[in-house]
Image (cartoon, rainbow over all chains, first blue to last red):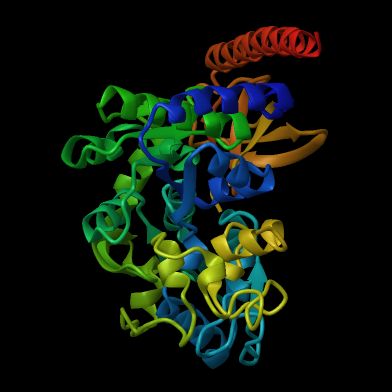
Length: 367
Length: 93
């Protein structure tokens, strides 16, 4: 693994990229779709190095904690503060996201209720088994990487006949927002660096329309610095050759057709729905929900939660524009002032891969 | 969120579970999303589940290419340095 971070390799790749950018008339702009890529770009100082050779990296919508809109966070808070004997389990980042009703961390649970942080969705099942008198709701958030793990967990509960378990779902698909961003035409994007681990599940084909319908080059890349640079190198080659495609530069992990077992369990348990994204608004068929057969495991219908989509962001927070790549974090007037990792005002400052958090952590003081 | 950690499978149990070794730490992992897993396989682990098997051939190929690139670059740098030194000497003369 160390070799993928080797200084000499990185320098060689950067030199190679420079040769390729030198021949271009102007600098190019690449969107790194995934939040984990955003981390790599900043953590290894690639942002500045790439800028110097004419490649501007902008962050995309690939942080599920960030793009989950307020109303779903508020529904989770509502559940645990109003209902007795509830165990709400979720991933750590989700508990810190501020909403108009505070965050799960600051909320005072009703009597007998509690918020528990889990590492794996399956831990929620253990909670449900050992607390039969309580309702366990897993606030499940994620993209295609995480969705199969959540679907499989519900499937286990279904076959085990666990009746006190359900999920509050915030499950998002990656290709639809990319289409929305391209169609919005607010920013010109010369290429997409596709998320490696989402691609592990879905394969190469779901991005094909970006190359075919919009003529935008792209590459699937892994998360080590040299993986990312290999991806960029392929995008530059495509620009030079004037042909757009989806190249796979993470072939040690991503198979062209994805992970068939994971796709099958998603297909079995879930169906698409139109969904609201923070900043991006309503995107057709961009979310997933449990199929009718499993509605007893869907917290939204089980507990009659009335989640009204599109209720808007927190006033002043520009997280939505950051997620579309329209502004970079320091352009928000709250950045590093009212909004910082110790007291985040918006979700992009909460998540470890939120663009604002990453910017704050690695770039303060840089000009 | 989509963080995936490469780890080595060290134990497989009947119930689709197993243990993986990540830098010496053994972690219980659900293996039911991947096919034909064997002890010694490298997998990518995400949220307690193995989501993909690492393809060793592909990994080796990528590493080979990276090494080649680095050594090519080193040769090029050397050449450039020699030329720069020559130019310097010429200027001094």
